[in-house]
Length: 195
Image 1 (cartoon, rainbow, N blue to C red):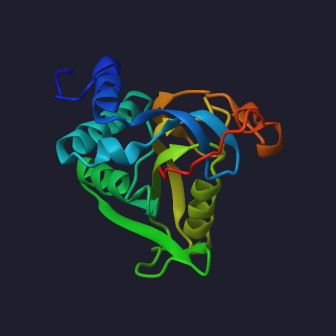
Image 2 (cartoon, rainbow, N blue to C red):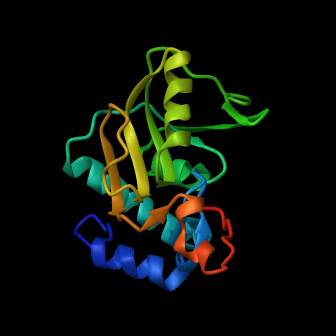
């Protein structure tokens, strides 16, 4: 832990390992791709003290790279809810979320305030579809997107949104299209554990 009480890289990875957040097997990702490794951040986030520390560490990473200022945090439901809330708490700003309506993300309970600066918070990003949908919602409402913060960047930096992106952990697990998946070809069946 550093002088501000924020976990470092070793403590972050230890928390993910202790909580069972890093899984190995045969998984179908939200993107439709298959992989043999999966970060199930919900396993770590079920412990409130761990969630708080992980999100504080993420805010620490934001501060270390001189991240743009934010007025509020927005997260896509369901995976980003806890991350968004804890990020907002650490930053001392408002927390809102987008949720599915008819299969697409929408602002059902909250509204975007025109001119306000929003941080998009998510647990895991692979291709970034839900993050991009959230960015689009903020911009459609007249808000400004200061950046994106995620616990785990499964794209190893390949996901780009035209705004600053910060993560606690970057990884590039092997992924395959279902028709090319060697685990499927060996007779395995992919599971979708959620995030």
